[in-house]
Amino acid sequence: MADRKYLINTKCRTNEAGEIKSETWITTANLLELEGHNHYIVFYPTEGEDVGKKHYVPLANIHVVREM
Image: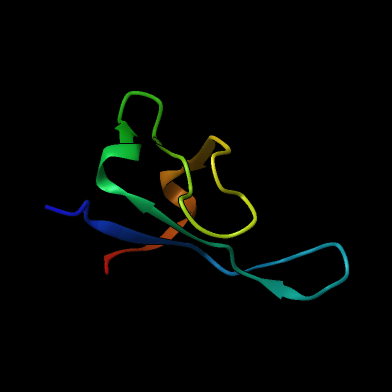
């Protein structure tokens, strides 16, 4: 059975240039973990330019986590 894939999308924010920015990553269920005591989602993207890099995203910054 194939791993379930998840799309993680952060809330929109304004960057240094005044542009509205939102980040999106794709990961699998076995690379996604919730650190509730630290209020973070920890994951390794499986697609895109950040493949294999460990990410810590605060739960407050998460906009969408959707199964693909």
